[in-house]
Image (cartoon, rainbow, N blue to C red; front, side, top):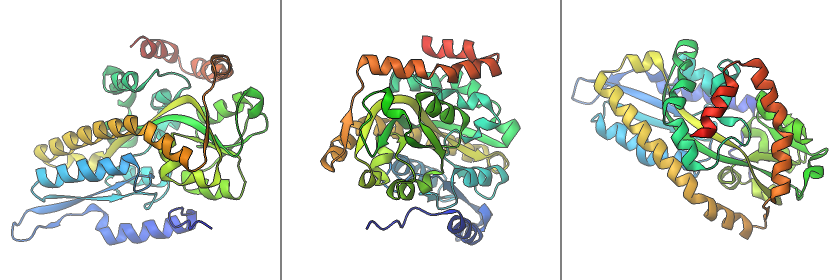
Amino acid sequence: MRKKRHFLFSTGLSVAAALLLSGCGGGEGEKTSGSGVEKKTIKVAHYFAENHPQNIALKEKFEKMVEKGSDGELEVQIYANSTLGAEKEFYDGVRNGTIEMGVPGLIMQADIPKMGVPEWPFLFRDYDHVQKVLNGPIGEELTEELDPKHGVTPLAWSANGFRMFSSNRPINSMKDFDGLRLRMPNIPNYIKLGESLGANVSPLPISEVFTALEQKVVDAQDNPIATLRSSGWNEVQSDVLESKHMFSPNIYIINSKFFNGLTMEQQKIIQNAAKESAAYEFDLMEKSYEDDKAYLKDTGIKFTNPNEEFLEQMIKAAQPVYDEVFEENDWAEELVGKIKAE
C-alpha cells in the first residue's frame, strides 16, 4: 500500500497551515544579524509535488536569485504540496496577506472571467503559441484586474502544461466518455467541458485525487502528465489519452500590500526572479514531456494518441463551452480570435 504522506485532507490542511503560518510570523520583518536592516520573509505556496518542475524552478531560480540579489534582506520559504492549504486556501492567504506569494492556477476566474481564458478548450497550438500570447499584451490584459479586485500583483506566467485524461481504462472514442466518473477542478469551464464530452464530473481539490482514484470514487482525472508522474497517480491508473484538450498555466502572484511596502530595488529583484524562474519552468515542462511519457510507460501506463476524427469530435463536443462564454462575455469572441491569430 502506498503511503499517502503528501495527500492531506481539509482538517489536516487547516491545522498544518495554522501551525506553519503562526511559526513563520506572517511575513513580519526581523533584524538581520549585525546589519540593522529589516529582514523580510516571503512565503511561497503552491500545490505541486516537491519534484514537479514548478517547485524545482522556484528552488533553483526564484529562491536563489531573490536571496542573493537582496543580500539576505529577503528570505524565501517555499511550501510545496498544498502544505499551506489547497489552492483556494493559499490563494485567499495571499489575498489577505497571511501568505506573501503563491503560484495558483486560474482559480480567480470565478470573480475575474478573463483569467479563465487560457484554459478554454483546444485554444493553443503549442508551447510557443502559449508563451507568445501570455507574455505579450494579451497576457497583460488578462491580469489587469488582479490587483484592483483581489489585492494581488501578477509577476509572471508559468506552465502547468497541456492537460490529458488519465483513467483506469482506455479512452479510444467518444463513447468511452459516457458515464466516466471524471475528477476535474471545481471551475465552471472545466465542468462544462467534461459534461459536454459525456462524463460524470466530480469536482475535487488536487490533494484528494490520489485517494479518490485509489478507492475508485472516480475513474479518471485530467492534468498534464508531469503532474501524473510527480503525484504518483500512475500507481492507481492504467491509461492516458493524449487529448491536449486544454492548456493550464499557473501564475506567480504576490500580495500587493506587501509588495508595495518593499523598496523599488527589492520589487525589481522579485519581478526579475519571477520572470526567470517562470521561463525556466516553461522550458522544463516542455522538455520533460517525452521523459515523463517514457517513465510512465515503463510503469505500465498505456498511451492513446487520438486520431484526427476522434480529435475533431472532441473539439466539436467542446463547442458548448464557447457558446456559453460568448453569451456571457461580450469581449470573449474577439479575444479568442486574437489569440488564435497570434
